[in-house]
Image (cartoon, rainbow, N blue to C red; front, top):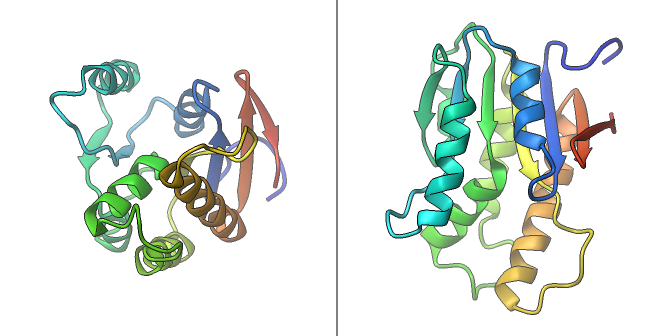
Amino acid sequence: MAGGIGGAGRTLVLGGARSGKSGFAEGLVGAGAARYVATAVVDPEDTDFGERIARHRERRPAGWAVVESADVAGVLAGAAVAEPTLIDDIGTWLTARIDARGAWDEPRGTIAPECDALVTAVERYRQRLVLVSPEVGMGVIPATRSGRLFRDEIGALNQRLAAVCDEAFLIVAGLPLRLK
């Protein structure tokens, strides 16, 4: 896609923890009407994660329609909407899918059907779409099997999503780097 940042089509926004990826993605969508798909599964006992979610909620414009769903492919395949759709974030979606299948100790690729459905839904989506996903492959190799599994699965999924998106950005220290 030629031209400025955040035109029509599908955009993947990658970045590490606290990189500014969500804020950047929200800026791509703008302050007008939008559909925000929140993928987090809230655990009432996890107050730290609850505080993160609260900060995201406070930052969102009041006119955004919020859909809380772990079925991102289903949301995208559902009724078309005219306003842009922002999905935040693919990492929490992936974690919920691994949890739902009890696949933390299973071989890599166990959640391939869910990932296939997501990539297909993104590829077929014709309205403005912004996806936020963590980039976790730049640090040390995780010490735990579950950490390595997540890193490998999100890395493969990010590659597939980038291939079907029109543009992609990496956010580092709040600064966007256009990848595609």
